[in-house]
Length: 289
Image 1 (cartoon, rainbow, N blue to C red):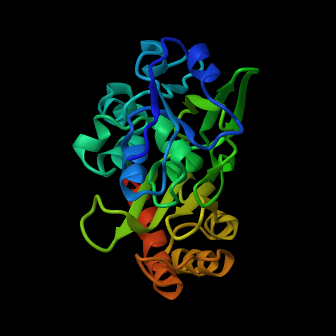
Image 2: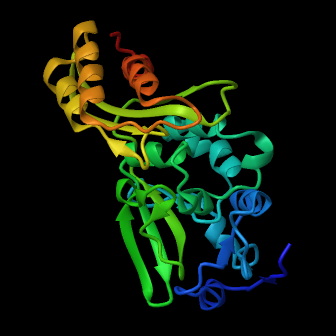
């Protein structure tokens, strides 16, 4: 292993000062799960790792603000978010998704900021946060800026986060209505998905007033499915409408082949997964498709 620095700053400002926008060998470390895996695989040979463990407990908080939004610190561990009483009560889709992320050992150390910054397209949280209309606060030496979760990832392992910036908060509005996340895996439920589908619905009687649908894993970033959303909003949630929405989804998105399946295979998964995810959300609302 090539020698590298391991630095332990005691404030956010100090941590940011140790990053370098021009040096890809300098990386921040939250939980370290992704960084360690990349180092073991030989795809990352850092010159400096900047640990975020000591920059302040407030950056790991999970709370509800005065506007009724969930505010998650960038260093909040996935397990702490999953077990938070208000998350389970008011953001059940988020809690449900987190229970299926990796395994308890990983969730006990992995942070939400690191998860989003890693931008592996197979991760569960990016499409779910996008469907929930979440916002991500990104902080650098010159200040903070806020981006929509659906705009965070720009491609395969790529985001709008600069090398000298950190995710400091994730803000999730009150869940607009019933939601569900379904991932299709080739082995165990906690394995990398071949396809993930996140659905949030605003339901009024027998109508879907608004649908927010994102796919992940089969695309290089969380991808909204506007045509499928429009079908549900126009036609409701009967069997024919769900089939039409699934067909629209397959026609509007380019799916990527990888070790988890061919593009044709993933198209078939999408046809199956989208109706199931919508039906799962509706069951949580007391409606029936």
